[in-house]
Image (cartoon, rainbow, N blue to C red; front, side, top):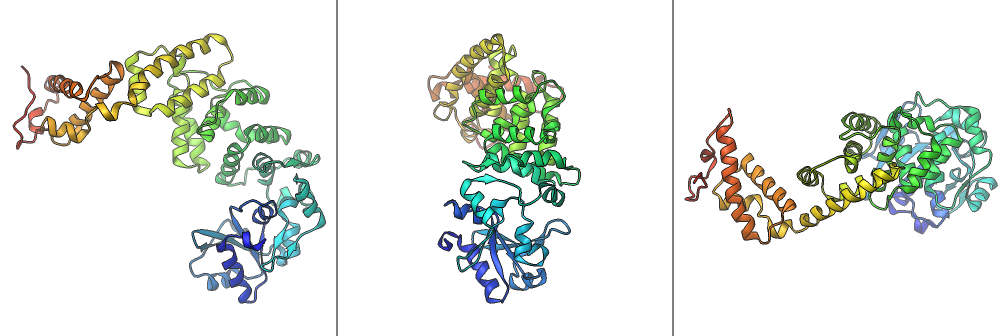
Length: 431
């Protein structure tokens, strides 16, 4: 079994053993190894003090809240998290771990340490609190969220009958939990099976943790789960699922700037990746576009601003949120119009000159005029379609004249010719 442990974990274990400190692989890494899966995080528990760890691993550092420090060690391409035995011994450490399937340890010799119940629950793929649910939740209330998160991410596992009732009885408060820790559990749960995750939150009466994301409108868990079933989340699943949760109790409005701002603030507070924060905010903002009375020019502008894959997510989100036939019919018409325009986007590279080519052709220096000309060409191509690159270049000349007129008529007029590269002898001007 030790052959399956990543090299970075073996190196750290052996170094601690040579220094005379008892050390074991613990937690999810052991669980995954026993299940025949590749472990993700490498967690090691040891009797060594943090000062001893600092001496053994000069490149490491201590992180985490007071009372629950973790020593991070760079190991090869990854890192290991090392903690001192909770309670001073391995037996006490294992007794205070969250769930029985995580209360297992593996020595560098390959010896497995753990109770019969832990080993049996792993065989049964059963999630059960390790001892008293009230005790474990008193030590760390976030374990109430980890239970449905594991149910959603550990394929084939079920939850023991008394586990969710144990959470309900303890009624843990998350007031002292760091927002980023809450956000991590929510993110991982939604990346797994979102239906299982939400049902687990509802069963344990912890669904209120998502209340800031939901908004203030009506709608219960049953309607939310129905919307999730309708959602096409084969692409960008986390973005689409999170945007659905954030849109569920909000009125359809376009654009929803307030909703987008609220969602971004919540996800950033949870320390989610920036790409996910901005992507979810943009989806929430534009989710009602298929029901809006948009012109083809507006559609083209939005397609250029966000790209085709983003709009596929908008359609998926809108379709999941709408439960009436009229908006769904309107969405089908909008989608067909959109697809006709989007088809031309895929021919851009072959037909539309690049910014550098426009600068060369029209003797322009780098500046905003190049961007304006390129955008005008791209928009016209989406709306009408150029048959050839030559046609696009010819059209660029007339568009340059239009930009020239707009610049000249502006109260902030600055001669466009001053932006030209004076070494060139080509200049587009009014006829």
